[in-house]
Length: 482
Image 1 (cartoon, rainbow, N blue to C red):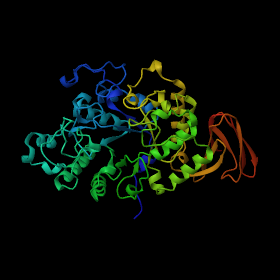
Image 2: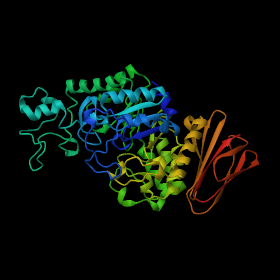
Image 3: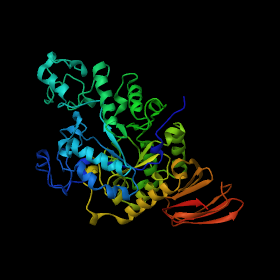
Image 4: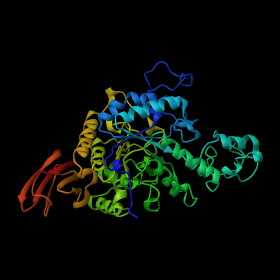
């Protein structure tokens, strides 16, 4: 059976939002649960503190989001929780009251859909939290709880808070704040399936699945996909898998994964020895050691050979996320490196994802620093913003940049050149990460002529489908067929 993925994702540009840090609403008629003391908006983020960003605040920024060329929003968790990142879920059917609750979410969802913006939510279905009702009942009633088998209890008494005593239940990575579901229990499994169905029925456009590789129950994600797709065949299901995800990308589980296998090489090639090692050595992607063009080409060829082309077109490509240091900081705040990586991101097969603030040059090291608040306009880097808008506009204007076949044309020294070809349209992207200008001769081109669409380089057509590219040091260019 051929693999089928949502067509809209192939043409999408995502914007990832960490809700507590993006925008506070300007509304004054707030519910009591939102009228609470908050951290100062402009102070440094903390592990446990709340800044008070909310979903009405996001709705008020949709003009800005749409002005970037974004067509889809991925939210990190928004369900009721007792932490600012909301990966500790208390209630999967209630939006967190500090975000505005269900009312704010449905207002936002309607406003987004009115603008043809898709909305994808984060599904944390491997584990819940100590405050999740069914686990909390076990804490209260011990072996008498009717939901005992929904979790993996190993002994008594349970110790949910005292680290000097054994927890006696399985928590994600031994974190007693995150009790793991027993996915082998039919009722627990059915409960999660119904959550997946419910929010699709409410109108969301897909699920990003947190740590899906930790769910070991055979057939779990196959059933999840089947039930979600039965409601909306175009719903996007994307998993958080940092390494080779072939096991989940055979067409029966996910449509794509967060493509960290692109992230690492893209930064290693563009930032090279500027990569700040202290903020990348402890995480599960590798923007090091430095790559030359040949090394980058080999990494990309291996990545493109991993999965079916239908899957490649619906991968979620990224440079930054809430789990890693922001790409600008990884590159030691070298803007040129970051913009060259952004050029690669926005011309690569799959759906590019911009982590809120990256587009205006927001730095950030490891958590919680990578979760800073969205900055005031006075501190935006206008060059970075202009570049993002220009590259996103080019992606929307040229179908070849979205679904065209990918071919490496040259990989010499620090200059990498590739093409995207769709029917009669050819786009050529050249990136020179070196300290000297280079000249690259391209023969046997698919077209006889073309012009520079982006960048500072020049092209001379020599006849017989041969082009000579002149690319200044540490720049990139995009060439389009005439």
